[in-house]
Amino acid sequence: MTPMDTKATTTALLVIDIQNDFIPGGQLAVPGGDEIVPLVNRLGRSFLNVVCAQDWHPAGHASFASSHEGKHPFDLIQLPYGEQKLWPEHCVQDTQGAALHPDLDLPHAQLIIRKGCNPAIDSYSAFMEADRLTQTGLTGYFKERGIDTVYMVGLALDFCVMYSALDARMVGFNAIVVLDACRGIDIDGSMDAAMRRMQEAGVRLIQSNDITSG
Image 1 (tube, rainbow, N blue to C red):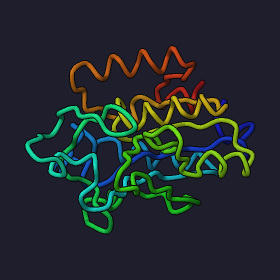
Image 2 (spheres, rainbow, N blue to C red):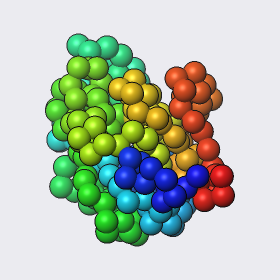
Image 3 (cartoon, helix red, strand yellow):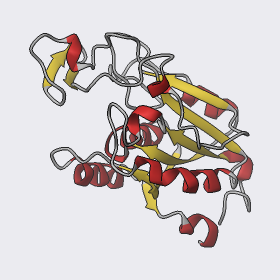
């Protein structure tokens, strides 16, 4: 089945965080992050419904190591909502680093959902912030549109893609991650952990050719 064959109107492609700061040369580069852009563009043409997620942090965000004296990127700290990994400053609102990759070509995308906008709360997932209480609005958008199946691509597989997939399942969507249209950071075994967590949650893990030939 391809998205255009059946149930096309109830299927969406969620393109996660393909932004300059996550591309090689950016502030929080995902190895090979630029390699997926042509494939994502091709996949996008197979979907009637396309949504882009965009990290959109205010300066001085709580997830930045520079916001905590004596802390370094990838340190772990406790914030009011729980454990937080600290990151280099990245995807600061209205900077070139936060912009979508210039070669991303999805002119029919209907929505850009911005996340991580609250200065005190991180948001890996496109559906829910890290406090596990604050919704981004994406769940309601998809449900109002009659979407029941969400295919996910983008960066980084072991963080924002994984958390988006887990939350998609939690709120009742069929969640499918297209592995060759993602790239990961892989910190301290995070890729293996992500694959396991997604499989345990019932997320389907596929390759792009499964969409067009399966």
